[in-house]
Length: 351
Ligand SMILES: Nc1ncnc2c1ncn2[C@@H]1O[C@H](COP(=O)(O)OP(=O)(O)OP(=O)(O)O)[C@@H](O)[C@H]1O
Ligand SMILES: [Mg+2]
Image (tube, rainbow, N blue to C red; front, top):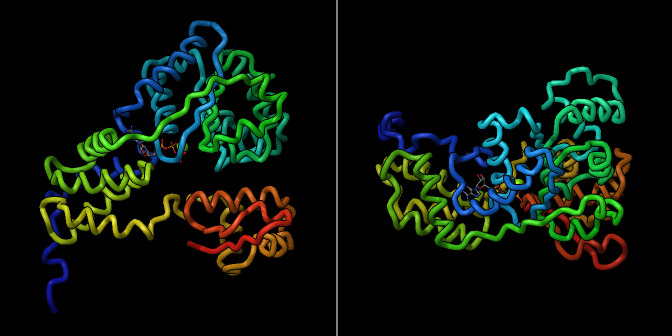
């Protein structure tokens, strides 16, 4: 039998130097082309650190353009400078924690508060407020549009005295739909992140290549192909996917360089790529996805009829989960979704 592993590159020969640097949640050492936004965020926090009222911020912009990364970067910088002694940074992803109770449990975890068993949401909130009100806090609610209700934001505004609340969303309409009472208390300043242009995209990719690959393995033309594709899609996650994929393809071919043809093959694979992987979904999303898989092509209302037999969740919640799966590129909703309230029919299937 032929030696199956004959052509394999040895570990020292790998094209990758630090593949982890291509993970979506890896926070790179530098975040080029987001300096202005980072300064803006830092200025709001500085007010708080100077003993003044912090400003609340609403960060909007399309998926994959560095909103989460920019905020996390500022928080990390604060921690590295020891400033988290004065103002406690808290980060919660509302996609994963979409109820007040889950959010508070998450915050308790971040604060190292362990006595959470059998405590109701109000009790947890009191404990959290107790800790935070001894200092000040920066509370980031990422993917805030995925929250089941905005009540928890209201409570944070009312009962945490010295704070900066940073809300992040790619749903520009979200703030418009928020309760007027909440909006007037929140009065956030908005930073709208714009998509990167081609030159910026190219520069960001080059810097990620520098931290993830061995020196000089990427041919310029291959980088250009990836840059064009990512610029067209507008989402930097495509870039991370393509860099890794092209690197893998080049290695499989035992090439010592990532060449144009490898980048092209990676681009071809993009269509089977769903940005958020199934294992990143929350329990309810997994349930809804399983339901869609078993009932391909049914309408959303038909799906809900089946769903509610095993669940007491409202149509609104069901709709939100389905929308999340659509945004994640996992299911496809054909037609107008609001149809469920009595208009056109929308069919749902796995992409
Ligand atoms: N300027 C940049 N430099 C380096 N990497 C970047 C830059 N902008 C984005 N990225 C990377 O692209 C990926 C997507 O960015 P991020 O998670 O911040 O997107 P987002 O705007 O929060 O998107 P979503 O709305 O989908 O949550 C991350 O892995 C991030 O590290
Ligand atoms: Mg994000």
